[in-house]
Amino acid sequence: MQFAVTRYIGALAIGSVLLFAVQAQGNQRVDDTAAQSRSHDHDRAHDHSHGSDDAIYKGHFEDGQVEPRTLSDWEGDWQSVYPYLENGTLDPVMAHKARDGDKSAEEYRAYYQAGYETDVDRIVISGDSVTFHQAGGAAKGRYAADGYEILTYEAGNRGVRYIFEKTEGDEAAPRFIQFSDHRIAPAQADHYHLYWGDDRAALLKEVTNWPTYYRSSLSGEQIASEMMAH
Image 1: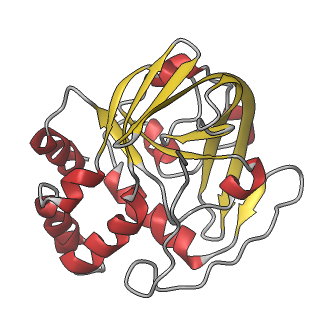
Image 2: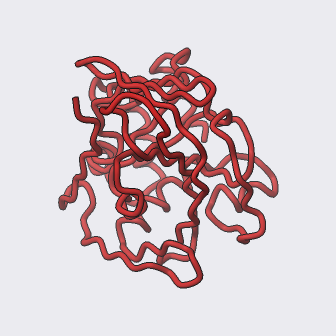
């Protein structure tokens, strides 16, 4: 059983060619227009009323503000939002984005199709264990913190990937998992984007496919409502 990130690079989904370069002084720099588009869309999607936290959600912060985090920040039972995009539950979200954005609802749907695509429909995190569920079964591993990386996009905004490495578990469980939830310090996640695979460095360059997970206790309609409220 293979757990792999599917990358989509197409005119409808992305509309640009990806270019990558490593930023000096230890930061991973991602120089590509797709990353800018992703960040721009996510900025709008996460425009909460968090006071001074707004700048962080929009990807503007200093290195000194970034703090280590533990796996407990993502503990719980999580569901992929991809099925809700596929069955039309998130259509109102795409229409909502189109009213204020620079793409049509269909173009937004294509963009998120590439972003949300995954066959891992459920993830359960308990203690240091992470279980990946898909139609063919489940794979479980135990994970330890492996630091974080600050990603800098060409547009000037940034993000943080919190990285964990497998210490033991099923062979099918990925060696590395990388969380992105628009936070840069310890806090309970309400949703997150997850990257996984066996190549740490390659995962840091992945900006077109970002499987997204919300609490399994939420209905598709509740998730859509949260997305539009943000």
